[in-house]
Every structure is written in C-alpha cells, then in structure tokens.
Figure 1 (cartoon, helix red, strand yellow):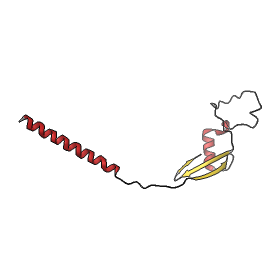
Figure 2 (cartoon, helix red, strand yellow):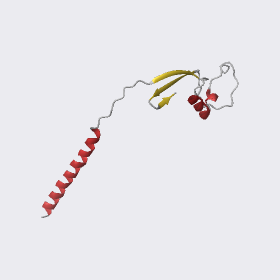
Figure 3 (cartoon, rainbow, N blue to C red):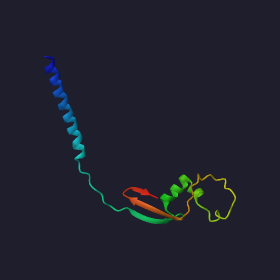
Figure 4 (cartoon, rainbow, N blue to C red):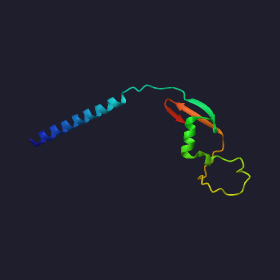
Length: 103
C-alpha cells in the first residue's frame, strides 16, 4: 500500500513539474516586434537655447565643470571641487530614440 502511495505521489510530482515547465516555455515563444529604427543625432552648442539641456545644466550645475579658456595657463588653485571632471568642449551630441534622449 505504501509503495502505491509513493508511486502516485511521484507521478503527481512529475506531472506538476511538467505543467510548470510548460507554462514557462510559453513566455519565451512570444514574438516581440523588432524595432530597427535609427536614433536621431543632433549637434548642439553648449550655450545654445535648447530648453531641455538648459534644465540639465541648471539641475546638475554643469557650468562649474566647464573648462575655462584661461585655466591652462593659470597655476593658481580653484576652490571649486569638480571631482576631476572637466567639460572640455562646446559641442554636445543629442541622441534621441523614441521617447529617450541622451546627451
């Protein structure tokens, strides 16, 4: 009697595992549409009138990281802590794909 109960439990366990694995396989079978769109790339100047970039400059205080044209010849120390980060260009690339924009 005991072996029949254990055999039945074993079959029930195998059946449950088979059904559980079968459900996981259906998730991977879904076809996701492939989007082969090309991102839109624009070149903007650091001081341009781009409203979104102006908000980013104000929020993260990017002006303090902007390299001064005089900073290479001056040997004095600045009291502004830039953590070693310096923005050394006026050219900013704006990359847009869908609703995501990167600078």
